[in-house]
Length: 292
Image (tube, rainbow, N blue to C red):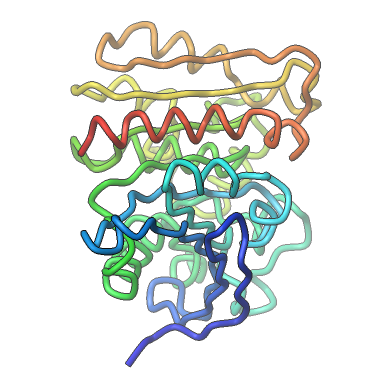
């Protein structure tokens, strides 16, 4: 019997976008996610073709709905035969005292880490949710449609941070490619208020901060890794995203092939994402094909 509860389903560009909820043991409560499964040709149906996965991680204040409603990804995903999955950004069923009183900490701001501090450690385990529970769920519930062994990851802002961390921390061959829009690149830096607030709130020790900081993690990668980053030059949060710090770190590691593009005049919004989402999906499709 399925562990999923279907909440909605819509046909889009020939494929199906479905929203589900399920109980998560990792975050001790209900979680929701959207999954887009492109349509198969008759030839593919006969061959029982499985489609590769691209996982999207959203940013601060977002839910599983923002990307599917605003990014404009389905036409290209359908053309390329990519399954898209967009989970929520944090646990929701948590004690009131853990929900936070600001938009950049607590509910909607899980930072895709595993908390080690106090009561937060019972609920804020988004890293394990993304890397294990959700992947295992997709493998079990969508085994006739999705090949989770062929997967890439991307995200925006806090979700870009999450995508970089998940991709860079994983064993060789886990993710075919990584991409991000306006990611928080160096959250442990003193000049990154978002990262400092989250890390000091969720993690016991400052020694743990580097384990969720892409600027440090990218130096530790010892196999070929492909990354695409787009960053708008008119992003009002540009000063704390630390793109240049990540670029410098990448330059010292020949294993990492990173295309970091500064996009003139673009901001931090989904207008920016929707402009370049096709590039990112084609980037992932290329590497997923090579990963086959």
